[in-house]
Length: 80
Image (cartoon, rainbow, N blue to C red; front, side, top):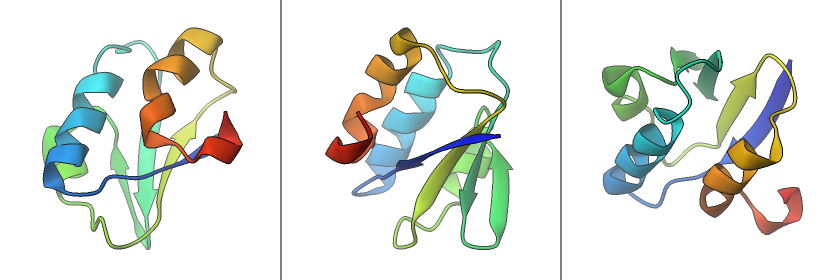
């Protein structure tokens, strides 16, 4: 399992994350926030996350550069 920290400033940021991840429908991914883990392709799941807690994107394996570039604006600078 590969994980990346991601963040959203507000609920609109969660929508941006969801829309970006939706561009990769063939990648199995989940998002964990606190005790909750949701399907990253589920709008209701993503929207239910508490943006005041750390958010972690979970993937089966390390993503390629195309994926990393797409989500770069949601990850801390130290991860790039």
